[in-house]
Image 1 (tube, rainbow, N blue to C red):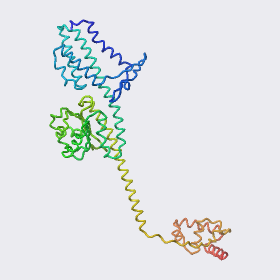
Image 2 (image 1 turned 60 degrees about the vertical axis):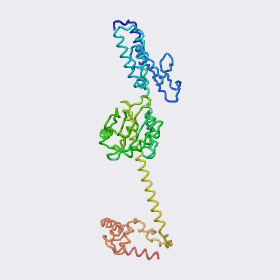
Image 3 (image 1 turned 90 degrees about the horizontal axis):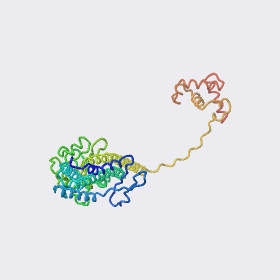
Image 4 (image 1 turned 180 degrees about the horizontal axis):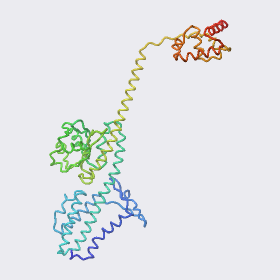
Length: 424
C-alpha cells in the first residue's frame, strides 16, 4: 500500500470517522419507513443540541439500485463482471455480500499499487463503505421495527375468543410481522398437520398448503427439523431446504421453499402446535434474527393460547350450569302444585310466659326444664328431649327450685299446677 498517497487514505477513512462521531451521545433515533408512509412521516428529530436535523432511511429499493451502480463501476474498473450480476443484488442481504466482495477486490487492487486508477478506486472504496453502512442501518431499522410490531401482533391475537379463530389469525399476523408465507399446524400425537396458512398474493397456494398438509401430515421422527423443535421446545432455522432429505418434501416443493424457520407452540407444558415462516419481505430468505423473532412470537402465542383455552372451558362450564338449571326448572314444572295449607288456629298463650311472679324470673331454658319436670321425667330423659347434657339439666333444676322457693320437684310441680288452675 506504499504506492497510495497518505492524503488519499485520509479521504477514504473520513466518512467512517464521521459515522463513528454521529454514534456517540447524540446518536440519532431513526424511524423505519413502512409501506404507504412518506419520508416526512418517517423523519425524526436527531436531538442534536445545535438544532433539529431530520434523518430518514434510504428506501430499500433505492438503496439496492445505488448498490448496483456502485458494483457496475467496480466491475468496469477492476475487470470483475460477476460483481454486477442482478442475482448478486436481488435484496439487501445479497447486496451486502456483493459489496463485501467488491470491497475485497478494490482493496486488493489498491494494495497491488500498480493501477493507474488508484484515485478512482479509492473513491469507489469510500462509496462501497458508505453503502455497507447504509445496508447495516436499513437492516437494523427493519429489525427494530419488527420487535415493535411483535407486540402489536400479539395484542391483536389476544382478541381471539376461540381456538379456531386464533388458528385462522396466526398466519396473517406473521405476514404483518414481515413474512410472505406462514403456516400454523396442530400437533396431535406423533403427527402435525396444517390448520391455516398465508401466502402473499397467492391465496391458492395457502389453500393447497393446508389441503396437502392435511392429506399427508408431517411425522415427528421423520421430518428432522420439526422433530428437533418438539424435542427441545426451541425454534430451528432450516437452510437449503430443497436439498435437505429430512423435511416435508410435499410442502417444501409446493412452496419452493429455500429456507424456513419453525417454532413450537407450547401450551400447559406441552408442544401443541408448530409455526412455520419463510421469505422475509425485505430479503426473500430468513436468518438468525428471524429465528429469534419467531421464537419470541411463539412464546407470546403460547400465552394467548392458554388464555383462549381457559376462556373456552369457562364458557363451557357456564353453559353446562345453565343447562342443569333448565333441567331442574323442567322437573319442577312437571310436579302438581302443592296443596294450599289452611292457617293454623292461634295457639293458647303459655301461662308461664306471662306470669309476673316467681315464674317470671325463670329463663327460657329453665321454663323448658320445668315443663318436662312436672311430667315426672328424670334428668336423663329431660336431657335427651332438650339435646343437652344431664349435668346441664341438673344445674337448671337446682336454679328452678331456688327461684320458685321450693325444696323439691314435688313442690315445684304443685306450684306449676296452681298457676295453670289460676289461668283457666
